[in-house]
Image (cartoon, rainbow, N blue to C red; front, side, top):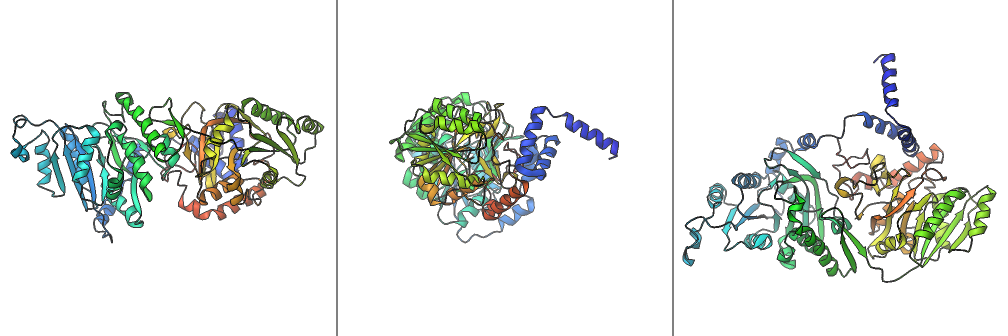
Amino acid sequence: MGEKEYGVQWGRLLGAFSVEHIKKGYRYLKRHGFKQFLIRLIERFQSQDIDYETWFGLNKVPEGELERQKSVVFKKPAKISIVVPLYQTPERFLREMIESVCSQTYGNWELCLADASPLADGDKTLGEGRKESRTTKLTGIVKEYMEKDDRIRYRILEKNGGISENTNEAIKMATGDFVGLLDHDDLLERDALYEIMEKIAKNDETDVVYTDEDKINRKGTKHLIPNMKPDFNLDLLRSNNYICHFLVVRKSIIDQVGGFRKEFDGAQDYDFTFRCTEAARVVAHVPRVLYHWRTHSGSTSDNPDSKMYAFDAGKRAVEAHLARMKVEAKVEETDDLGYYRIRYQLKETPMVSILIPNKDQKESLQKCLQSIWEKTEYENYEILIVENNSTKEETFAYYKEIDKKNRVRVLYWDREFNYSAINNFAAREAKGEYLLLLNNDTEVITKGWIKELLSNCARKEVGMVGAKLYFPDNTIQSAGTIIGLGGLADHAFVNMSRKRAGYMHRASIQMNLSGVTAACAMVKRSVYEEVGGLEEKLSVAFNDVDLGLKIVTAGYLIVYDPFVELYHYESRSRGVDDEKRERHKKEVQYAQEKWKDFLEAGDPCYSPNLTLSKHNFSLRK
């Protein structure tokens, strides 16, 4: 490229940005450095995210690997029973489904087909002694395959008992160690059972395995809407049946918890999944698209309105799960069908200490405090303002105005700025059982925000809860933290409109993450002390990431709660982005080395199929 042409390209590049784009780019440059900024800039002008059909083709297992899988001998090869309730299945769908099972590279399986279709003409009046000769319109097709493969088992049901009872009849036919659930018009990838068996072989305590999935059109010619899932995620499952397909469960677990329950028809798989995962020792996830859910006008996958009753059944499935877990909570349907909000009941009213570091910035602090006083309905809280080397007289005048009034105490930290040390100091001075880390450049939007955060944080399994933050232009600043994004960690869905729900609604539902921003995060004091608080070697950058990782590796959950919303006027205060580049670099290196193993393994709350160079959960190229 000549010098003149190069200049023209740069002119086009710069001309494509608005003032707001430039501001956001500057924020990104300060946060991540020039290398990550350049990557993001290049991506901005590359073609849009890779087409899923192309991505799927590129990520299919090569034929040579499929042949290799056929020769693998497992030490304890589990028998997997694929159970399928049939009902007037179109011939093409039936054949394609059976062939997808017969083509599996792992051979220790059986296909159990329970046919509830109407009997064929002439068979409806057969006597009791001639049951074996009864046929449906599907019988001939199935027997054709049975003659080729004796692993296929077939039974004609006495009556159509509905999806739950028909599935239970298919489960009764199973003789395997594990049972896999397959719909009569869906398809498996050829290596689906092999991948399942690999997970089982790695851990003898694996009781439940699930895979990623996508949808195919009626003709089976196009793949669409991939659902790239995290590893087992309790709060996400309570918000939506993200596990869905392909689900394989140890037969003894099914015997223990019971099969499908008719009263949950429409969401019978959701109820079943809850009961199985509750009883499971280990729930494993295969992060590969191995199940194809066929869409057509009568299916909920293509037309949710076709089965509106299913969403009420889903709500009742969540309620039944919470009741079994002895969790007092209210389940609400959201505007998005099939997605639920859990409101956990607070049994006590422990003190919450809000910790706010501050240097000058009187107006920002004033706006922050005013929003707390206006939006807080919870009574038992205190606010600790930690003064750190302010120089303006108006700042100290304001401190005198608010100190020891409206639940405020002003503390003084006269050493150099160290975000971690300042908050650790405030935590030692705090009276609360719960610590609420809060930036002075935030503004609370949600009325009742403390109670909402506390209702999650008070759960015994939870150590930390984070909120959903917006830039002043109503785009997302943080919808939780993804470990590995940008090389270490970064916010999810940055710059996406607050009106959008994000990939698989992940920006707008409660779920577990491996981190949340400390710009607004509640932590159990006992957990904060157990893990040693904020790491003071990380004086500016990624101290909240480090805290989150210490909490999850200690065995606690972190909850992202999008129903707590705040504005974050980022970069006004001296915080993460204002320290010298060299110190920032050292802190990044420290955190990357400390959490090297976690980074290499990948964030269990994210998918290895999704990008680590963008915030939008697009496909990894």
